[in-house]
Length: 212
Image (spheres, rainbow, N blue to C red):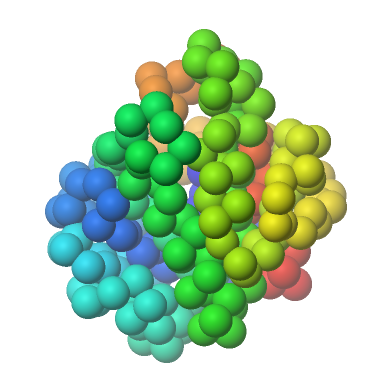
């Protein structure tokens, strides 16, 4: 959703994807990444750490960020783990805490970190209603003061972030349809969990505005 929305707002932007080793290791396991590459939306992919199969392979996320920026000449770099995630239902017992480290690296390497807030109005689990507890934990653990879009509004109250207002955000369902992509979160699409998709699209809108 983030990649597709950046591309819709800034069609000329060069967008690279860095896949961490927080979950699935072969990049080809991600159908969405393959489809984004085939659609010409991504200018390149980098797999980091134990992950493999990107256009380039890097020993670390720090190295992957450098490769994406200086080899692919990327204007924006989207970083996330591949399909799957380990979670124990506790705040720290999940591979998603790697987000804090990635945000800090981006800042220290001269980038502007933007946190895509995970939010939901379709998840029955209380800890993921509104802003997910995973997002709150990642924000609390990082020191980079990443930018967040105020979607949903409580995202602005997260500890250690800087809220940035955004203008009109493209409808994520239309954006995905335009690329022929089917995206779900826990089996739910844009109609079943609109807030998840709106929050991701709003993060992309922040990135697009930073690109000018």
